[in-house]
Length: 123
Image (tube, rainbow, N blue to C red; front, top):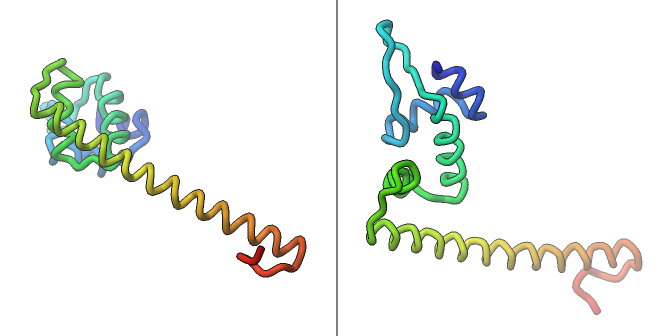
């Protein structure tokens, strides 16, 4: 499939696909006229790349991870790096949960203020 079709099917921009190629996360063949051609499996690969970016992994980590996902090839070093990335994500999740809980407290105080007129933060 051509780059525009892949972009549509994977829900990303053509520019993102070109960037993934630059980062060696995605490969294509070239037609005789020079157009990029991608296999059908590229849709799933692009979706995986998007998920990993959304999780905060950098291009280098994603590039290191892809052979394990695609070919089943892993190394102890890769496992260590992936575990470290997971731990980093867990830390971010913890920080987000704390922020959400503090925001819930502020919302509760603001709701009480609207109902009772009591200033926010007063018991």
